[in-house]
Image (tube, rainbow, N blue to C red):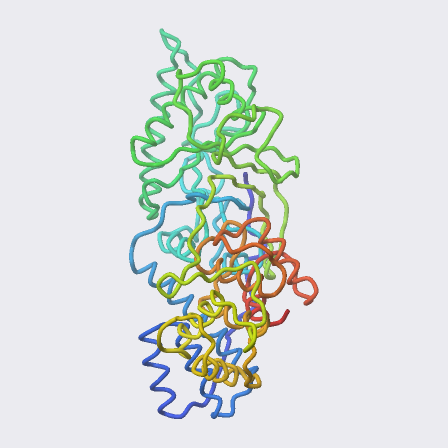
Length: 492
């Protein structure tokens, strides 16, 4: 698990946008921004068509407002001083490398790579990357606020029979001495001491208690009894102590050595050792799953495994190239969330049909009224009736978007309505309200036939790719700013 950043610089990009607004309009924008955030800001800007702004400029305004709101959300999370537990329940892709990447590199990969989890070496005297110029409490809180899931790794004392360790004069191996009772007391003492060190280093970086700390035990000779048994005693003591200190325990190792050692202890000597809650197996077979022929399928199931399936290689995303290991995480299913808005209005349906004066399904009409209300075009009860006031609200909204006023709301217009709001980059493992809006917009685009769940899964990834491919976007299945812009424009 040793990699280095090869390219971390991005060309400078300073988005600029200017739009002339009359003084009353500027006042309205300020008031609505304070009162209702991004949604109201978008509505306020888009109702100022009298300023002469083109529909393209108005679309850019929505994108800029969404990006601004996202940046404010990140800053607010940082100011709160409370980092979330990481990685939490997560199913998706991650990468690891030795040196924590620069912020520009992290931002580029957030918007363009399939990865949403990142392994970082935070502790341990045996790690190759003792110098971490980017790894600070601010770096930690920034990545967590932006939605990254962090995998803090500790690489301390290694198995006694591993020839390439110790790396330095001031680190050491696990003691292979069995002691009088054959319990490897020295190795156990080392495990407890290392857990205390790792805990202190994690806390100093601002990682929240309850997060998983992963101990990296590099591959060793399983046939060497004292080497194997002392490593097992070390891991057992480390696991027990790290949990006592308030952290979740995980262990990374080769599937054929360290992970097999744990699995054999689980099956053949149950209850004799403290086993980590999670395992991270290294098996470079190119298969993005959590299985290996070296260990049994019933252990650490469900949702307590991850797998490093591809070793050191270069990948480029967003013009940034990093040498990484690729991982697939299955660390617990993300719970589905409610799609209700506006005080309980159902928003997700299997399709969003064209609404006309003769075809106005009641539940979808309530959803339409809710969307118009959130964007500042409707006041009053959400009754689901398509009367004159609703028709006027629809026409006003259509005009504000540069569309001809009519009594019809077609699927393309549903897309424009559903996509409005904060538009963070979403990918496998993302969850929450923004995922609901993305999935609902994909339903309106005709690419999804099931209701939104609020969980970005492999099905959603395939749907995003199907949307990107015919539009000459990079079909990576990541809902990034260009994808959101196309959806927001109602492109079906």
